[in-house]
Length: 155
Length: 161
Image (cartoon, rainbow over the protein chains, first blue to last red):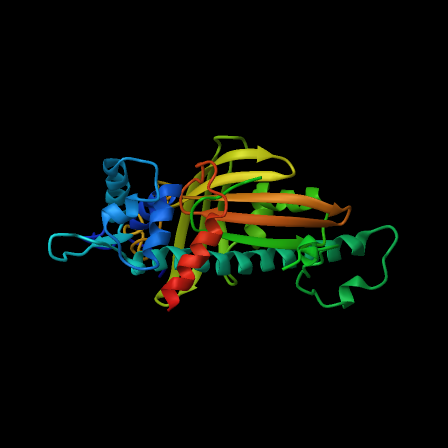
């Protein structure tokens, strides 16, 4: 009996697509700069605002977006509340992308096999037969690039 | 040049086939169903209204840890420029094609419910085609932000220490 992927009980504390919020928050150069700064260690809002040509409230707004997206946390330290990078959420985003990459690699392997199989069957019925193509094993597609401009790149 | 400003999967591959043939693999349902999905999966449902804004509905059947498992994906074609560029959205769906949240469909919490796939094809010569696939968590429509991937790599490296 086929088990379909059925709705599970709704989780209470997680929004439906938390990572989509994360991605939206990341889609802004100022916020990424803030995260990059925080990857070197915690900082106060004032410290974070310094390199930017914008008002403190404007920077605070970006920080609020990052906090809502789960990318940073505010720590209480005396009278200040320094911002700290929330590594778990960022890691989740990176892992999501990495998992998809693995998935697509497998898919494109299959696309290559499918194309090879088609080519093989086409050459069987071709008017001019090309050697014995079906005898060669269906090799996975080789990344045959004519030239790589990267190789000429010094450094 | 396409710029993606969020974490995304990017896969590049060269196929020993002419560009028109590789293109058909993506826009003809019978061809798409023949290769898509993880090994061992079947694609019993593959509906494509191949025009911009047209609906795309794909059903997948595979063996899971608890027996046979089915999944559906629904979305729309965003851009169709044969044979070089294809953009479509994709969300998890139920059997009726209604988009679901990740929790509703039993996916890990936090998985984005709305994703976008961009496929770019380039003829290397008459018999070879280079393909670049990008998959992002949300439509990457924010301009600029070059070097984002590098910034993310740097952050990711930081995460490991």
